[in-house]
Length: 191
Image (tube, rainbow, N blue to C red; front, side, top):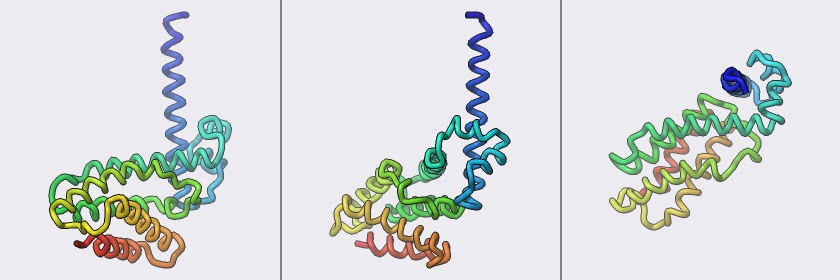
C-alpha cells in the first residue's frame, strides 16, 4: 500500500461525512417546512444526488430516525447546559421541559412525526435527569412524595406528548399547549 492510500481513504471518509451532514441538515430544514418532503427534494436541497442520499439513508424511515436522533442530541446538549443541580427542583423540571418545548418550536417536524418513531431509549436521558430532579425535590419536600418517581416520570413524558399532540393537531396554539403543560406539571408535582 502506498503512503497516499490512507490519505485518500481519510479524504473519502471526510467527503462522505460532509455529504451525510448536508443531507441531514437539508432534511431537517425541509421536514420542518413539510413533513412529507421527498427524498428527491432532500437531495436537491443538500446539493447531492438521490443515490448519495440513499447511500447514507436507505429509506425515508432511516432518514427520519436519523433526523430525530440529531434533534435529540441537540436538545440533550441544551438540557446539559442547564444548571439542574442547583435551585428549586421544580424550577429545574420546568426548565428542562422548556428546553424540550423550544425544540418543538424550532423544529415543527417533531410535532408531526409518525408514532413509530417514538422510541423509549430516546426518553432515557431525559428520564434520568427528571429522576434526579424529582428525587431531590422529594427530599426537600418541594415535590410530592405521595406519588412514586416511577409513576411521575412517565406521567410527565405523557403530559409532554399530550401538549405536543394538541399543538401538532392544531387543537391548541403551541404557546397555549406549552402553558398548559407547565400548569399541569406544576399541579402534578405539587406537594
